[in-house]
Image 1 (cartoon, protein in one colour):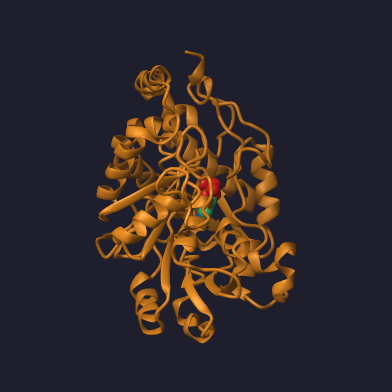
Image 2 (cartoon, helix red, strand yellow; image 1 turned 135 degrees about the vertical axis):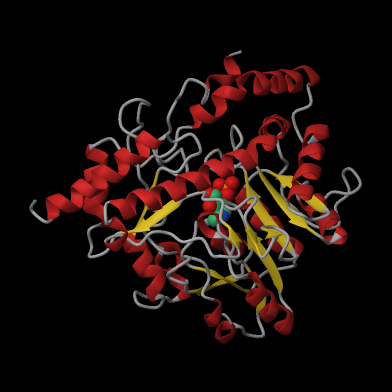
Length: 407
Ligand SMILES: Cc1ncc(COP(=O)(O)O)c(C=O)c1O
């Protein structure tokens, strides 16, 4: 089977969220520590994925179909919602969600600035204005105390992002949205399976948006996305919108987009779905391992380590530390020299991206987002990372700070 050469030979990927734009060299397993090694996850399920792909190829059905329906049902159940609608990517999930809420020209959409670009571009593409909220420095999620002051009569929706795998404070968001009557669209692209107060990501808002990009906790062999909702009318609207607003065939009352989930992706994801909680447990064990190793080296007093809230199930899509005193980039190159993969999520907050300059934000407008952009560094946390590799990462960081002290 030639299909499965991707990620089954312990192939490592460049430590970039989007593989098309690698920002550091590819690492070879066994030399250094990769930020993410998909081959280790995909290898053990190679036969199952190969069989699923073969079955789709034999069927000749490559768009939506029963595999997609099965995935939608399984993910709806997993996310504790009645409906899920597959689509072509997490970015499209956000676009479709905003379209389903009727967001358009002149509307305002609240969202964090410290997130991946897709959160804001979806609103921008519809002619709406992203209104950026600063973040809570401890969790990297929306600072909910700042939302209300930014609400205006034009506010049509808020997109809280469950960044790095931890849910935002959804009860506070929900309370404000109810009082001001606008939609809540969760950006849960990084947070499948995350919980807050026993509720799952994707079940809090009117709509929840997920990504199956390969680096996500449930990643396919390409792009894919999905929207969850408890509202059956909303689900029906999403199904039409993802197929050019068409219903019945070749009749269009609304203009939608072409954003259907590939059957091959759905088939691969159906194979992977049963492993999601075991993989999450491995990520959680790795996060605990880092905390212990950093504490043992006294580095928890030098770096700020990420925290999981007491009522949260953090799924650790990323393990992001803060490096103070402007030393983040030097530490990153030190680790790169030792073939340890890291990434900066995200070097430029969205309010300072050049394409959003017409919005009029300048440096200093969102201080916590700007500080995070200058301090954060993501370390390897993928499920199959070994204890030895974690030690290698922590020892290399310890050596960096020792060298800085001149020891
Ligand atoms: C927070 C966030 N939102 C949206 C997206 C977009 O998902 P996709 O890459 O599947 O379009 C991503 C993925 O990178 C993300 O991390």
